[in-house]
Structure formats: C-alpha cells, structure tokens
Image (cartoon, rainbow, N blue to C red):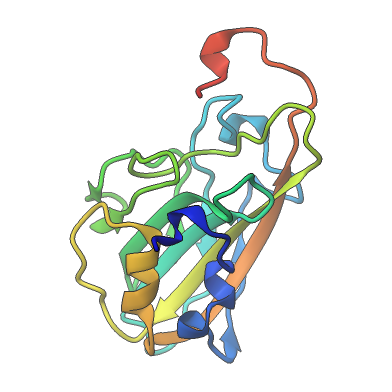
Length: 186
C-alpha cells in the first residue's frame, strides 16, 4: 500500500533518516509564526532558510512537512535535494521548477498538491495552529535522483547517509476566511 493514504512519521523521525548530530536551522522570516506572505492565503512564496555547515557534507536536503494536516499525514509542503555542500541557505521566493540553477544547481521534488517546489501553509479556516517542520539533513553523498521525485524516494535514498539534521518549526493559523476565491487555492 502506498504511504500516500497512511499517516507516517515526519522525515526526521524515520529510522532511515536518524542521526546523532544536530545542525541549527533558521529563517529571518519565521520567528515562531510563518508570515502570511509565505502561506497560500497570502503570496505563497517560500521563506528564506539557513543552516549551519556540517563538516564532511557532500549535499543537503530540506523537507517541509505539516503533521497537523488532515490525512494523509504529514502533508508535504516542500522537498529540496542535492543542495550543493557549499550552499547553506536558500533565498526567499524560489521558483517552482524541478531543477534550479540559482543559488546553485539543486533539485526540487513533488509536494502534497502534486506540484513541484514550495506549497505554503493552507490549513482550513478555523483549525488551530498547524506546525510546519522545516527539516534540513546534511548528507555524506549526493542523491543523484531525477528532478521532481516524491519525499519518500528522497528519504529512502538518504538512508545511511545522514551526518546531521535539524529543524525549524513555524506555526500558521487562518482564523478568517479569505475575501476572494483566488486566495483560496483548492
């Protein structure tokens, strides 16, 4: 059975992605709450994300998940992989292409909506705050996967290659219904 219809642990909680070492993850935009501009109720642009370099890393992976979503859980909001070892930050507003050349060549996978790249928070109006886990993994290998793969394929490929991991958790809650149907992409 595909994991698309079952609850699974967050990427950092999976056995194949566990590591003993931690790294620090931060964002100038996310200080507890995810700003509306980075939600699908706002502009839907990806926030900037930074992490500390890890000695021996050959690449990095970023996976953004929401474990508070309705099934399937966690909802996958962003998958970025084969981030070069000398890149320790992603700027805000990355394009939604499977292969990017800026800041350096890196690949993006499929999100829970079936698209490629970042899909911002969009919890149902009236839900309590959802928690968005920006998880970064330092790997001792380049995954060499094709562009646009799903989260689970990335996690399997990371098995036995994780040197360190860390996360930044931001929350988002939409208490008021958006004024236009264009703001609510369903």
